[in-house]
Image (cartoon, rainbow, N blue to C red; front, top):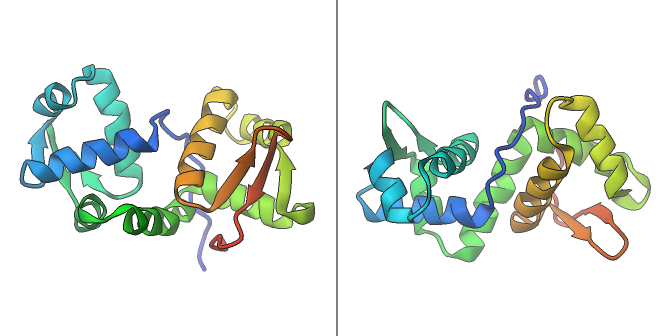
Length: 167
């Protein structure tokens, strides 16, 4: 399968923000100026940058100069219904180094489950300069949406979703 993708931090953007950004860019003919996008989304410019970084990780957008341009995959995502979007995200998540790493950890764990604390300790080991709590929240948010991982707050357990893609 080739070398494992590099483990990079995830921008703390909610998946709903990524969906909103892509839909607005699509509504504007698949390309928009970053400043116009911030105005359209009614969020601060710094937040638009974070959400754009997340969309870029998934290969949904390119950001030449001050523009946000949908890629063909981003266009499919923006046009798709909820199931299409989940399916696309399910394919894209394992291409991110941090998810590839997490999926291997969960796949090798007893019953394909790990306590949240263990996952956070692993985050500290692989990304020592990042906030493990914020990174964990983003992992759960994106992973649940893409239906590759689940999280039970009551038991504080992260688990591999039954349909999950092998990394």
